[in-house]
Image: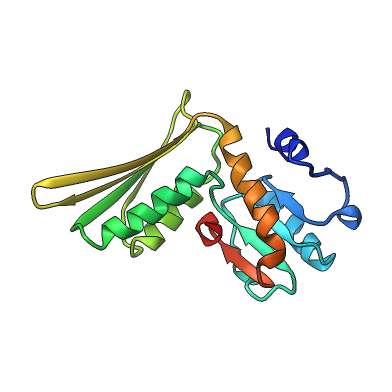
Length: 184
């Protein structure tokens, strides 16, 4: 889904880093680290959407490494709204639901949401057939409950966020930038 969306926006897909202006990685946790290391070594900035890996070694990379656990703009807004709501309500929990092939649990989106909300938010991970990608942030206070939910029903939801990241990549500093919210 991502390749055709990038090409429709005028990007040219190439096979090797030698011809690349940027690397886009949506692979697997066991492959992404080597891919990003190779891009950094080649001086090629990266846009990474693969979750389930440690990003810390790229904090001081000589080229830009942009990582977001979720490229859906609605998910970035959900995290922003949850962060704000957590300042005003007494408790919160996150329920994230994905297809059974999702390799990391909890998801990178749920982890980043919890971190933005203060870090001590319980996360419940569900993996079931029939699901795509869904997250609810449930917050409560005296006499009230607030639910913030984001649903992805098709992977095409990620294309606008990837295009935004590619557009803004040249304006980001070298090293690691985390989260689509940094671009909004």
